[in-house]
Image (cartoon, rainbow, N blue to C red):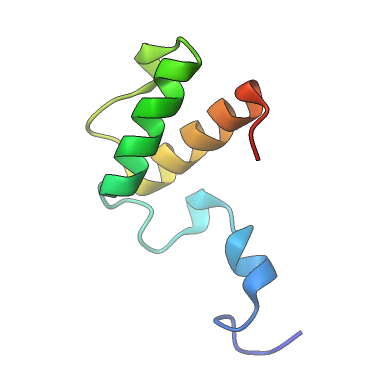
Length: 71
């Protein structure tokens, strides 16, 4: 394992959204689109909200992917 966190792709991709430096920023356009699609597919439109943070959107996306059994 490297001392440079940018080269440690395993821990970077599995970092808890609550620990993200930018987690309090508004969700990205890609997150917005993906969350909207997943919430519609899961028949859970109330899971989607326009004012989510990046971290909250990520957690909701992960939960929806799990409920839909997507990887």
